[in-house]
Image (cartoon, rainbow, N blue to C red; front, top):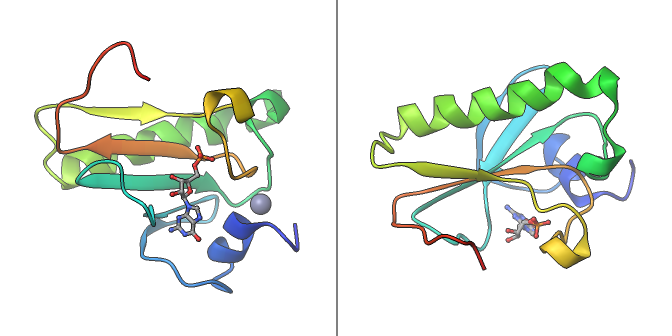
Length: 113
Ligand code: 5GP
Ligand code: ZN
């Protein structure tokens, strides 16, 4: 998508602190971190939200989680971390290119706000 913020970050047309890249996935530091570690993990494919994902995206969805686990291990988030997809405006989604949040480095409450 030409106008999508996260597609532009993935194509390096907009600067971001990239922390992981492969042929299908890229990950970068959130500009407004909500925890000491806050990384956004995205597919290169423009998918608007989890609701828009299809069976064709099964492997990609799994890879988002596995990249999160790898980054959490690399960053020694041994006390725990969260992976979150905000799906739709009511759940707090503000950028409409599917992304997984990896949050760590502090204590998290349950239920989330
Ligand atoms: P959402 O609210 O859609 O689940 O998450 C979008 C996230 O993208 C937010 O945490 C927000 O801080 C982050 N974000 C928005 N614009 C930018 C940007 O230009 N660069 C980076 N690195 N993160 C951004
Ligand atoms: Zn996009």
